[in-house]
Image: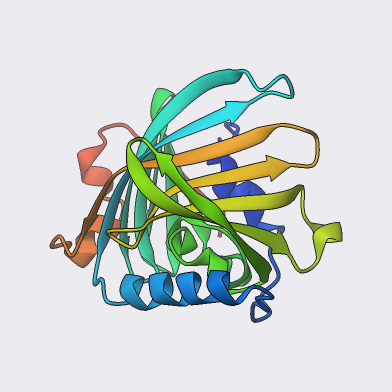
Amino acid sequence: MKKLLIPFTFCLLALAVSAQQAENTDTKANAILKSLSTKTKTYKTITGEFTFTQYGKDKKPGESQNGKLLLKGAKYKLDIKNQTTWCDSITKWTFIKDANQVQINSVDTSDEKGGLSPSTIFKFYEKGFKSHFVDEEKINGLLCQCVELYPKHPEKAKYHTIKLFIDKVKNQISQISILMKDGTTQIITIDKFTPNAPMPNSTFIFDAKNFPGVEIEDLR
């Protein structure tokens, strides 16, 4: 069996976030997050193009990865380097490009509800965190409101803080910075955010006809 590549932060944090309702101790942070959540829920679909960069303990950046995420409710399609994942909310297909292999799994609903996964990347902050408003800061030329998130159960997390940068004008997530307990930092920068683009449900289902000779491994 080919080794399945892990979609970096999405899988890492899926193990680290409680499914309990967030308890925000900062009134301003709570208002900002509530406004963000309310607006995000109005979108029928989201297309997000992003850059993922890991910084070492010395704060020097490693190799960056670009990716694209299509979202429609609990359905998603995630395209990153050497790997594409389709998910129709019940079944997940992960295609490893250089191996021409797809692995099929059932969706783990506990992870989808309680963690940071592709389907929750724009709403993960709603549960499992305490929050604190830090300041306004420019990110890639955009004036953003910075809210720090702290896991309610830090003993279960591999990070100690998540910094959420929210575009003050558009009220959309601009950047997510994850400060790990080992001193490294993971940053997801949203390069392009497009809401409400048409997406048929077939977008989120792997079609073997489009991948001649693909090896299929059903792990359900």
